[in-house]
Length: 474
Image (cartoon, rainbow, N blue to C red; front, side, top):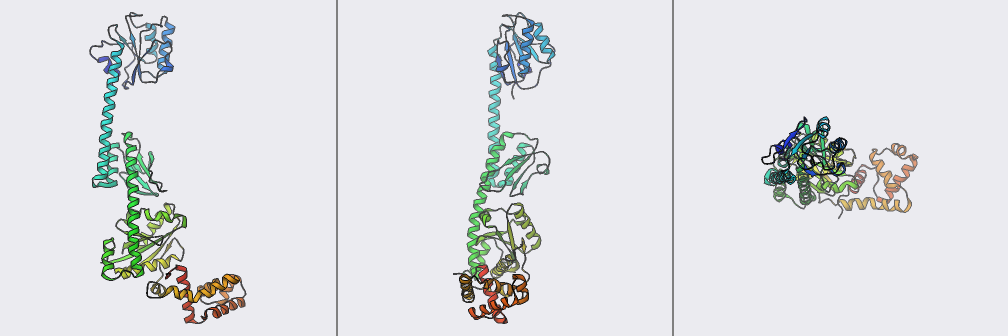
């Protein structure tokens, strides 16, 4: 501990004597300053003991002015050396010091000022060494908590104990961990955590707290750990994404598919639900490293075709989807979620994936499949020549549109979406009904498929969906 004024006065061999009526301050002494200036104010920093022999203090006015200067500087006491220019502490100086509650003590002639300075300096050095030793021990305990198997929660628990105050860690607007409610409300210090991501990562510390000297080190440890976690997520999602892409495309089937999916954390003994997250084009790069809320602990995640795939065991699908949607919104991501059905085995995973992908086309923040569709079934089969189907049916139309700006494909899309109603298409596009009929006739001539015939209409509908979803391309 730093030395106090009472310790200095009680030190054996110095023979210091308290003078005046001012109480001794318990504040630690910061230094010992020796001066014979009449106005030492510009050269003091506060917290010192000011030693003087009063060589220039020949009058009461000068002595009172000296006390005022020392007091204004924030010094803790005046040590007056007697036996040189003054036989005792001047009365005017004592009176002025008592009025300002500034302690005064006498330093006898035989006691060198340097002895007081050495005692204070030794105490400050010892205290500094103790602080460094304690800081090193705190650093070691934080690192041990992080690296000893307790991970980030262990680090934050240890930090909370060292600070004697609750802490909470937030990332992407979501709370990752907390050690107490006070860290989430009331007076708090916000400490930014740099991760290299635009994740608004923040460490909250309830105030007041002890040991502020360890916060910077904890800050750097948390930063490194979160950055490492982000890199691990990116690698794992890339590997799992390749696995899922092979399963979805039918390149990996049977027992081999089931075993590898099981190894990736996707249960093959129960039903699974697939969520597909599609982010805005400028935010896609956030998906590989994006952490998920605690409710998704244990879920398998991957990135396939720039979409985040989340595979969760069968359970409360609507609640989980809503939690994920709210989290994405709070993270500042413009994203939509396609939800697949709940199915077992690797074949069911493919089915759920295509359902979620088809559901995304509705464009809402949350998109559930209305029911199982023939479209999804055909699109999940790799033996169906989807690209050829779409090209054979639609390329003549798109080529004609490009050459003549005829908007035939747009008309066909609306015609199929509006259940073959010419009147509804005309109203939707602001056209005359005969114009709509003329365009449908052109489509029939170009493709050989008549949209008014049920079988041909189904063929054109599937071709449009294949092209819209980008499936079956070589």
